Image 1 (cartoon, rainbow, N blue to C red):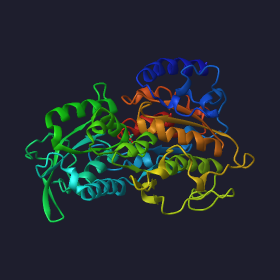
Image 2 (cartoon, rainbow, N blue to C red; image 1 turned 45 degrees about the horizontal axis):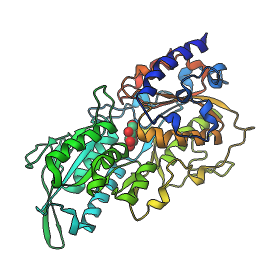
Image 3 (cartoon, rainbow, N blue to C red; image 1 turned 90 degrees about the vertical axis):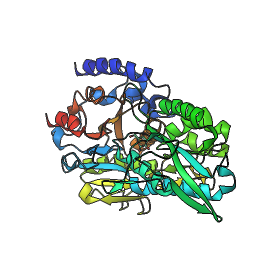
Image 4 (tube, rainbow, N blue to C red; image 1 turned 180 degrees about the vertical axis):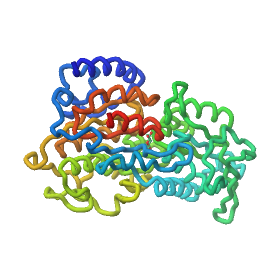
Length: 445
Ligand code: BGC
């Protein structure tokens, strides 16, 4: 009965989400034994659904089971204020993400360094104005907001709003009169240049999915017909959108394009003129996402295998993450990836060596985890984060059911959390950061 319910809802919803995405998580890891466990991968899970068949191995109430939010931090999408109710849902609740401000600064600096190093050729039409366009992922997502601010700060185009840099999209700004930004000015080798944000928009498709790469590919078409050689730099809140713009226009026109995430395709494109990207250390985040769950299930100190080596020797050093106890949050640190170092980042799905050792099955028995990805066609989560999770779940003896959402509604995902009692723990990636209660309500039942 339970199984039938799962099969029907999954088949129904997966039909939609898989149809919408050529490169879903399903296609990412070819080598993986978890493909069989990956309910979002098969579409027809009936024959292979070990995790949902048996009950969880603990008798805890769902509300007491370990819960890890990841990638989308429970928070108010207008103010950014953290949702501490969700972050401290029970004593085994955590968030895993990365340091958005440090990464945003790094992205802005990376672009500015590129401009100064290439000043002789950067101003394509020689008008003394360095023009850039900016693809915004999700105006209500803290990471996206931080990156928009980071670029504007470095470019000198930011204006203050409510004590911080305004992160609103400008639409178009051909003459520099937009209110949300200002013209910046830089001086290199004794020559002054104006820096202008020519255009920016949130890349949201008509169905409501954010960070939408296809929308960015269309936008660059429109922007390039309006601005042509005025565009000297393309900046993007992520690589999914950045690569879409690069492939559609900037590669052929020799315009450096900068993204974020260090997805493998973007790193490879650096050899072909992609300007650079930021690694948010997804290899550390994916590990932490499952590690905090493993530790909570084992009833050991939460720092085990994180700041303190476990018995297998897994340990992280402080240069790759921080933990803020008052926010119940682990944040990976970011690294810039440019032509100088990209060879070290070519495979974004490789486990981080210091935490790559198998846990012993005897003392860490297999447990079942329900984990969702808010949008099965999100480039970063499907091509980088989920393959990493699938590598770590084996090492940590976790049997994970991966659920891929449509990126539009929370119910598309919560519908597939019909029987939380079958799982030992949960890892959640919300569609909208305000919506944590849609999930915790189910666990509270
Ligand atoms: C990534 C984006 C991704 C988003 C999804 C961000 O951290 O950089 O690429 O679309 O997470 O929530």
